[in-house]
Image (cartoon, rainbow over all chains, first blue to last red; front, top):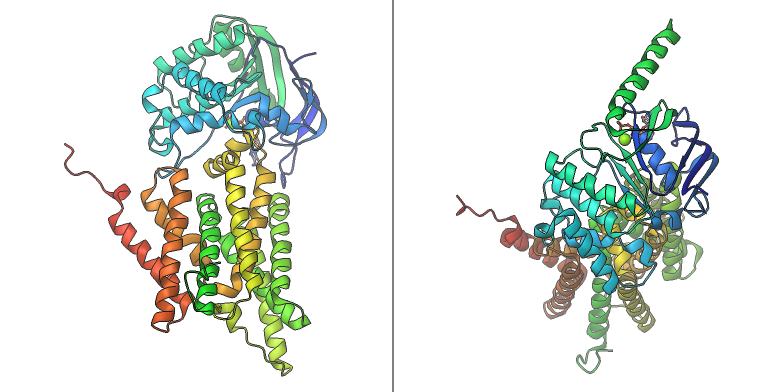
Amino acid sequence: MSIVELKGIYTAYEGGEKAVIKDLSLRVERGEYVVIGGPNSAGKTTLLESINGLIKITHGSASVCGLNVSSQADEVRRRVGYVIQNFYFDPFTPFTVEQVVMMGRFGRLGLMNRPGRADYDAAQRAISLVGIEDLAHKTIGTCSGGQQQKAMIAHNIAKEPEVMMLDEPFSNLDFVAREYLQGVFKRMVRTGVPILMVAHAFDGLPDIPIHLVVMNQGRISYDRNCRAEEVEGIIRKECGVSENARVADRK
Amino acid sequence: MLEWLIENNVVCHALEAMIFASIACSILGVIISRMRLSSIGFTMSHAAFAGAALGMFLGANTQMAAIAFSMAVAALIGPVSDKAKMAADATLGVLFAMSMAVAIFLISYMEYMGKGLSASSLLFGDVVSLYREEIYALAAVCGLTIIFVLAFYKEISALMFNMKIAEAAGVRVKLVYYILLFIIALSVALSLNIVGGLLIFVLLVTPASIAGQFCFNVRSMFIVAPTVALFVSAFGVWAGFEFTLPVAPLVALLLTGVFALSVMLSFKRRINTKIH
Ligand SMILES: Nc1ncnc2c1ncn2[C@@H]1O[C@H](COP(=O)(O)OP(=O)(O)OP(=O)(O)O)[C@@H](O)[C@H]1O
Ligand SMILES: [Mg+2]
């Protein structure tokens, strides 16, 4: 069975007039590097949040790591890493980067259990893997935007997830950090952990087969493997085509 | 409990009650002010107030009625804000207005019927006429609050950091959030007789804000806030009885004074002008 398996799912926001995701099916296997592209408001973030159950699906079935997302959402979220697209931490947030990274372990630890040796080790490993040792004791709200983004990535690496989802994780990162972290994700993929990455810029993609998913208006319009250097061209074509189709529709 | 220290029974009870109420409320205050949910304090205290008015109206035990009513409101806050996808703040505002309407309606009605009742002890608190049982109940709630924070420390800190990130990490946010609401309801309802509906807010918010001026981490906030609250309220009780001043407002003013002082002294707000 695929590690992520969506069959004909629909997702709607409360008060929304239409479903944001419509009749969408997707399979992701272990060890795949999935790039999710598409224009703004195509439903990329909504897709990720349907996979880990932060948003309820209204129809269809979703299973992740063999669990039913609708009925076992907490358990799914314990196993799926998710770097969110937008966050804001005010300067007085009373948590250090180290504590925030540690919080990645909290879900899988379960209620009331305290972090132990293994959890501290995992957090330290994640911090040094992402290269933010010097920030460990800085409060998160006083870090720069890129530093905060790195902290959130480390938070999810410390979680040791079975699936890693990232929503534009590089939007604030310089090119050195981007290339370095792409290397980290490539190694995660090698160990079997699939990556689902929403992105708008594709420089520095690892030179491994890419499972490219292009979204358009809540649907998947392209879902095939390709090479890293083809990604941008395909997305341009897919989005351009649908733009033409929309113009044609209106006529 | 403190009879060995203070001979006068009334003073002793007042001191005990004030200490337990201020410890419980200030600990909860650290959580809710970080979560930007301070208006829970408003809502709960008025819910307790409305419950007490209802109890008087029905000739029932006011304390029990206050607890029941604020529990009911606590049970509404979570689902209503879930369902309506409103900011919790808006839900709290609506429930606050509803509680106030119930309370004023009942009090006015009773006055109109000539059954005039004194709501002043509910509004302003009354530290001199406390029952032993009330103090035990407060002690129990104070203990419950401390146990809650210790047992769920990791979940609570994740919630205080960021609800969405906590949820994505797989923390059982809803469960902890609901327990939090119930403990707040309980503490506020039990503190109503002591500090009154209007001043509970001070105990919830001010010690947490004082701690926020000096503390860089959550653990120290959980220690500083109740410690400050404890000393200020103990001093307030002593000064109140010594100089025959109303205790609860005095404690409120003292806490506000300490807050003002801490804002002035806070090194967190200082900018180092020697850096070039
Ligand atoms: N909380 C919400 N309530 C109602 N509608 C929403 C909400 N969040 C998103 N939407 C709508 O859902 C649609 C898809 O949004 P989504 O955030 O998934 O897009 P996206 O592909 O991630 O876009 P971007 O590239 O800008 O991040 C949009 O039309 C948006 O208006
Ligand atoms: Mg998005």
